[in-house]
Length: 215
Ligand code: HEM
Image (tube, rainbow, N blue to C red):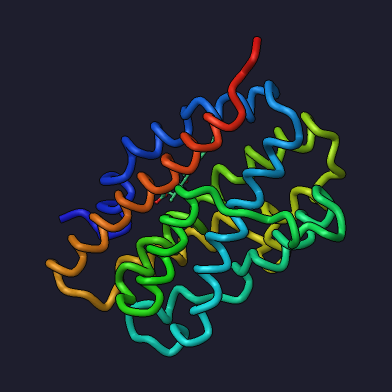
């Protein structure tokens, strides 16, 4: 039987491709959009990570979600530095969530408050992705908009406290395999992971509508 980390990865593979090849992501990474689109996307991430990390302290003691809560993953501080760089010191006053982002963040918060297994699904979908493909996004962003390497604007993608991401991901997959949940609950977690990908794709779709290519 496949390990749970393999099951969750395989189950979300198709949606991963869909998210990765969404029009907005392709345009953004293809260098076809301005830095404003990147800033708007970064703002949306702020709402998602605020929801993920606001409840993390309490979940650290939870038998299901606790093993995943690691301070070296926290992204909110990095996002705030990036936004200050991208939008200026008044970034908070102009920050706004797209309706699709609101739906996504609300679901994350609901899981954080009521369902640790669901929280793990959202945790996996974001942080393991950031540790993987996030590095490709950082590289493109640095080249396209001229941010300093691993500096302000792309700090979200830089995990200062994780010196070996490949090793960290291995450990993370081991924790997934050891998830304190029976088979039925594991299936529910996989379903939530699929939903998490769909919520991401919906945000990309909304961003794509806000930043259509004129050419
Ligand atoms: C253009 C955008 C993206 C690129 C280029 C990209 C690329 C990658 C790459 C190269 C990996 C490494 C696979 C491995 O470890 O062998 C990965 C893994 C992953 N990505 Fe993405 N990705 C993108 C967008 C996303 C999005 C939007 C999400 C979800 C929000 C996501 C979630 C994940 C997850 C959860 C993994 C870990 C899979 C696993 O090993 O279990 N990615 N991605």
